[in-house]
Amino acid sequence: MTSHPLVGILMGSKSDWETMQHTALTLKSLGIPYEAHVASAHRTPEKVVEFCKGAEGRGMKVIIAAAGGAAHLAGVCASKTHLPVLGVPMKGWATEGMDSLLSTVQMPSGIPVGTLAIGKAGAINAALLATSILSLGDTGIRERYLAFREAQVEKALKDDDLVMP
Ligand code: RP5
Image 1: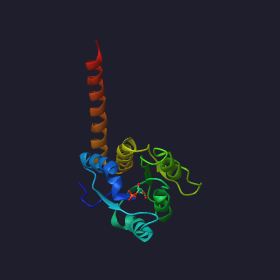
Image 2: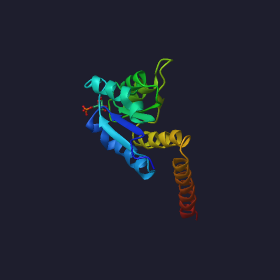
Image 3: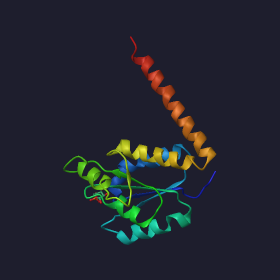
Image 4: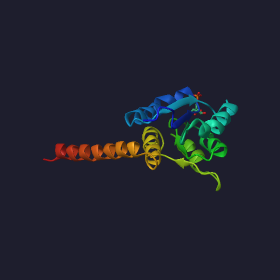
């Protein structure tokens, strides 16, 4: 199994970690090496640019960028790397994350960001989508991802048993 980080998680603030820990936990559970950093498109733009420019050279395959409010982090990341960038809009703002969602998802044509749902669901799904992308070129990751999905089916079927009269 590869030990160098395949996924880079960037978040605009430490306050985003409460949500983004779910990305990290999901990647960990699937055996995907990652690294996570606080780097902001407006507070520390040079750090964001340096990270994204160096990501491919360091062996990374996917970048996950999380931000709230005027959430331009994912777009800035995507402008500095051709690697797939997945955006996770943070909740908890004046509009419950709609501002984050729209400013992450509404990229003008030419620089794509794959945007996930607001908050925890998006954080978990960003990890799963990253795993799906990685599974295209790694049979071990593919097997672990398929096993995860199968286990999820089994759990859902068991849950259904519980609610039957
Ligand atoms: C954004 O501002 C961050 O991504 C975070 O969601 C939000 C608030 O940051 P803090 O004021 O909590 O540091 O850039």
